[in-house]
Length: 248
Ligand SMILES: [Mn+2]
Image (cartoon, rainbow, N blue to C red):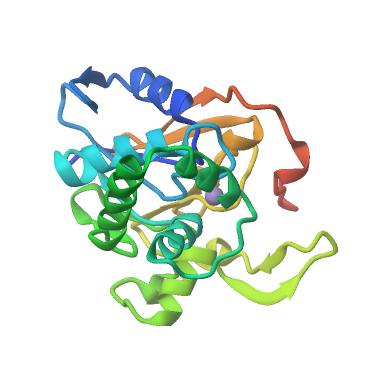
């Protein structure tokens, strides 16, 4: 199986369409299809902060649930939006406010439609994906080797939020352990969640969240080729949002 894992989109619908074109996909009716039957895998965080979160939900729903031509794992922003649609009290901050504003501008009928689509997408998708045919595991914030195959609460927290310590840095951002440094598996772990200026490969792991919504680029990692394809962002650049690592 040939797959194209796509990083955090965060409502950057136009960049997503450009990325599909760059990857050789063709628009057929409402979705993008690759002539060689390649499978797109969305690494989560479809919405929030960017300009067109609802359009991203609709496209991904159509591809993953309706036509079964793509796969998806949820990110932490997806989890929060799901809780919003459930009617739970969630704070409209960290980008959720943009998705909610788009949603509230829709008429009631369309609102019902979109919330149904997103909730179904979320409920029918696994916490993380093991695709042995492509020798890859896809998890939004990554996964430790010993967690692969487990689906308990601890693993759920890890794949959604990363290896958090419970502590925060001076800027108020959660301090995370660098789990990738300790990964020794032979299976690729493809993830996103932490914006980096360039895809970051450590052992057999790759972070493909290249901060499209912060003005950098949207990235795909193709397997089995192990090639990277990125398209430039159309959003304003925000340098503060990118994490750098000591070895870079
Ligand atoms: Mn994200």
